[in-house]
Image (cartoon, rainbow, N blue to C red; front, side, top):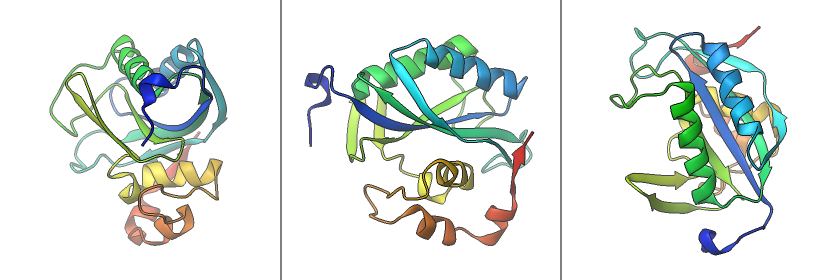
Length: 176
């Protein structure tokens, strides 16, 4: 495992998943994307917007999600801290796990590596530990990279999508 803190000026590639289910969801997502764009981050690809039911409580407002592929010289820790600052700037406040939120940005993949790290009070797992079960991550990710391979499971995206329950695949739609 590489020491991410010492790899300065290295080009890193990552997939980030964005979601919002409170307030003006599209506005929240666009604001987060603009803030990210102002950092030392090049957005290489962006999926369409996808709408899905809130999980695990479907009574909460629906989410709008998308995934991006980025290039950056930031290491994992610096990228994570920038993302957390962007979430706060957009209006995210600390709440219970899986409760509605103005913005959520997760690092799905970082250089195809398997990383478990504590950053401040946060524990980060890359690849994201539940991403392979989430339609709102897998479908947008498939849209921008049909050859993506899960670093830990060593399964390709087509395999992961084919193993989702059909109701999950039918429960997501492109948002205009």
